Length: 423
Image (cartoon, rainbow, N blue to C red; front, side, top):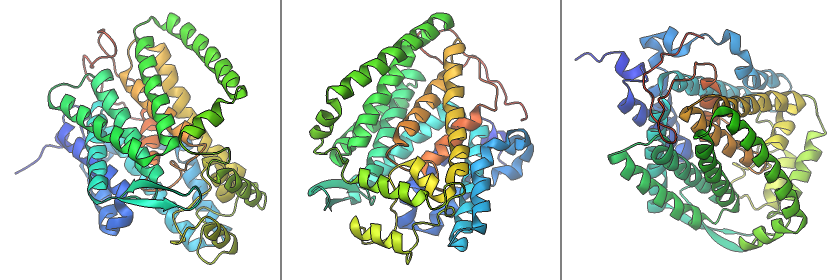
């Protein structure tokens, strides 16, 4: 039995395969530390073989878009000065191949298929955590929290945030109907429960904010582009002024108090200070990609002990920019920020300029979530992480022509497919 190429690599015909591939990828990103190398091979197995079907269409030509690979390339260069060159080289290869998989997914999947896959994937990830998860005691604040099958409540909270985001996008933005309406609603309920159970202040606050952003973009989508830009600019000014006023009145402490946190963010401000001191040791090029948190290295061992990290792994500075500065210096930080901000601004432009752009509406919301979380978490600079996968998927979509959409209330479905041109 022969399977047509189009059923695997054509965004208009591969909905089933794409949905299952995305769902599997999210499960691997969540639990590869539990299932080991076989899960990573399964992730590569659903994306890399597509190159053999039609490499021109699946890979495209990224020579004109080398900035997408800038940070990954610098990670390779850091091998030459890393104190742990073997670890740096291995992880750099993993990160590069991870980016390639994300870009293959970008060229072969529609936004609707990505959303369906994310709904399924988040539901399976959360169900697994609910079935096999545990509670952890946090010695820093003396509380118990549900971490699911993860090592951190913040990761469970992140998947719950994504589940709510994609469920809302599928139901309200892309108008998925039938069984997908029920699947989206079910995932939303599971995600909301897990979000509350995790007690992750970061995830709760960012989720509320991003769902508000999505709802606001839907309202903007009903206006003409000129009115849309004016309203967005006015709203941005009001938001900035209001946020400054709220911070001045002590709103931050009040919000943190609701979650049982203090102004030190459970030790994160001290951790950030330590990271800044470490970055000063090599501010231009850093210590080497993945070359800081290595067992046997004195500073890493000291921080693991101070923060009660018995496993001596899976820890970081809880700030993407500080972590990137420590490992890759100013150069690597600029290259990573270039990717994130280009995607964020690029999709925002499409949302504000184009008459209908549900794809950019969803992807802008994803990038906004990653941008907000970047100040307190590390989601985009490691391989086999859902954050970095979504980052490069979203940024890659900017290299393709934006689909045309029919006029309909809110943001609707495409009236015809527009095949990606060769890039």
